[in-house]
Length: 407
Ligand code: LLP
Image (cartoon, rainbow, N blue to C red):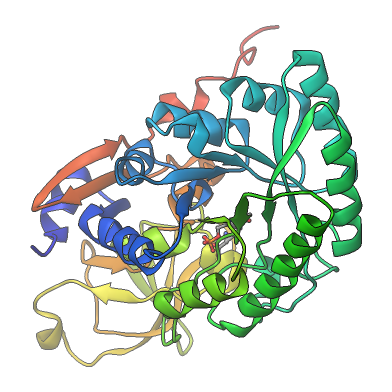
């Protein structure tokens, strides 16, 4: 059943995030089925969309969670994900986060450096509890994506080189406090080319083989996330082929495949609804000013990302000729734009627009810049829509501040 954006905007106001849970479920099912012939765990990358209802939706389908902070681990736990399905990734884990993760009993900690391995060992020893670990290998392949979301080259801060990883596995194997159960790589996000994934998987699988030869048996092959989606005219990777490439790379090895998709599961199941405030021209340049801004959806500003825009007024055709306009927000920055040079008919104040593919890295990257409350979030499922996060108000924003009226 199509979602009635007008009714939702009327009821909950704008800017408003709307998610199609049926679509998210379908995205999960498609990926899970692609791995049907193998042991697999889909660990949803919570950072893409951390709303508890979203995490819980995937949890109920059998997903685990890929988390990059204690906050995300606690979100996953709060949403009902079992500890043995939770992975802790990230280059800079604090002691208190490592300790809490160990106490939760999560599946494994993905290590990103030797220094971190020693820290995890220390914490594990202090707790008297062995830590299950995995090492993030940096296979030095070019994922051919935006430089800000490319992570698998030596010039990026992520992971460790193959040789160092091998030395770390040997050290971990000999440690009383580390149990090397997994191996991990993640070469970037919004990937649309299969070849770099294939290359990375085969490099890492070879490392698994050489570890097996010296008695180190890895059980989990964590291929990261990164599956790209269509924002404009991209040709996304076919998930059947993706699964095939991964499965073939580990032929002969007894491994559970873990993958950590975020964007693939949520991006195209989300919209940001916004209303027109004003129109103006500066010389020949036309601007449509809307009530959503870079604080609500940061991707255009940060990555020059393209998001489709749907103009939702039914009488669009009668309005007159559509001409190119920039869709901009109320924030005091020239970088505050949501879309550039899009064909829009003459608009009126109150007209409704939907910004597409906003289900991943939309709300989670939102901020309170300019003391703007973050949008409300709504979930639609089998024809029913419900609020899953209230709009932030002024009181919410100042709640933690103090001392301003003291002498
Ligand atoms: N696993 C690891 C270790 C990651 O670093 C990431 C994303 C994922 C999984 C999930 O990647 P996905 O399947 O969503 O591509 N804010 C950027 C994306 C940053 C991605 C960071 N890491 C954006 O809006 O495009």
